Length: 257
Image (tube, rainbow, N blue to C red; front, side, top):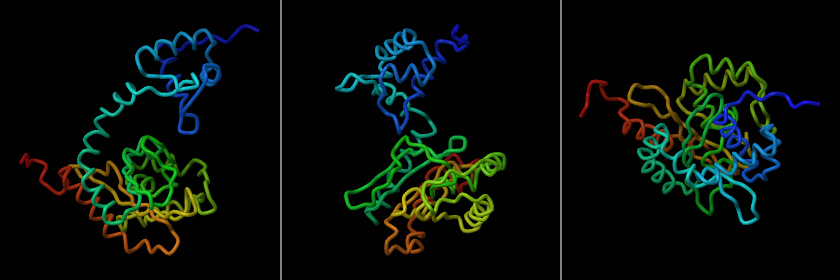
């Protein structure tokens, strides 16, 4: 049977190869890449060789392929993450020092929350979110905040789709999610209990840019055993407001000082 024609450009094929890597599959063989991208093995071999030369990919000790350091260096220059992380880091570190628990910074990309930074300690509860990882908006504290303040078309898209469950506590009912988003807008804080892992509870708050738009969220993730999340709300809110003010929120837009 003849192979179906592939109209993808060489650039798109290379991007598809990079897109085949994920948090679940950070290391791939050439044959896995060819299968995941629907590329003929010789084509995949040629494109992978180019990506290796440029530094977008590299080989691990076993010879398998993984994302290269050069690509990470380029990605770290993304303006939406770079400036925000630089401004947010002192507040993230202060929140960590006050609690010695996980502190995360995330921004929205489509219908997902992308984690831009995380500070954690040895005694902190173990969580699955890592820098660069993506999670559905409805299932995490930062994601709920970002969804609550997202454009209405984004909210409608999420509310029209099935809601993935990770634990028995994950919000999977659309009416429940609508109510949760309304409560977040009312209080300015999200509390997400056991949605990704049953042992953790997240307290998250929005970060505003100079125009007042919510561009990110910060969260504190704690062990839910014997934790009263309300006592941490002022700390998280203070951190979020500090970052927002450092970004120019609350100042007149014509104030250049």
